[in-house]
Image (tube, rainbow, N blue to C red; front, top):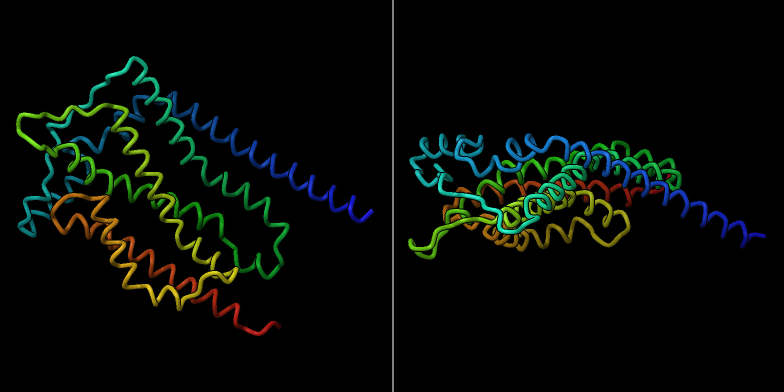
Length: 270
C-alpha cells in the first residue's frame, strides 16, 4: 500500500508538472500570436532600431564621446543595409522574432507557474527565505534582455556591421544573420543575468560557498574582460567597460548573496 501511495504521488506530481508545461506553452503561443499581429512595430521600432544611427544608445554614447573627446563613440551605421536572400527569409525571421518576443513577455508567468509547482515541496523556513523569488528571477532576466538590447547589441551591430577587410568589399547583411545575432545575444544576456540565482542555489545545496567566489575573484575579472572583448570587438576600451562593469557588479552581488546564504546555513537550528 505504501509503495502504491508513493507511486500515485509521483504520477500526481508528474501530471501537475505536465499542466505547468502546458500552461507555459499556451502563454508563449498567445504572446507569440500577439507579437505576429504587431509586425511593423516589432521590426521597425524594436528589432531594426539598433541599426539606425539615431538609436538612443548611439545618441547618448556620442554625447559622452564629445565630453571625453572620444570621437570613436559617435557611431555611424548609415552604411549598414539588410537584404533578404532566401524565399522564406522574411517570413521565418518574422516567426522567429515573434516567438522570441513571446518567450520574453511570457517569462514572468512561466517562472510563476514553476514556482507554484515547487512551492508545496518547500518548508516554511525555505518559503520565508525565498519570498519574492518570482519577481527577482523575472526582473533579472528582463534586465539582462534590456542590457543586451540597449548596450551590447548596438555596439555589436555597429562594429560587425561596419567592419571591412578591404574597401572593395561592401557589407550587405542578410536579414536572418542580423535577426539571429540580435536574438541570440539578447537571450544569452538574459540568462547570464540569472547568475546570482544560480549562485544562491549552489550555495544552498553546498556545492558553492563565498570562499570559492572570493578565491577566484581575480580569475573572474579576467574572464569577464575576455567575454566583454568577444561581445564588443570594438577596439576602444570604453565600449568594453560598458559591458564588463555591469557583469562584474553582477558577480559581486552574487558573492554577497552567497555570503548571506552561507551564514544562514551555519546558524544553529532553532
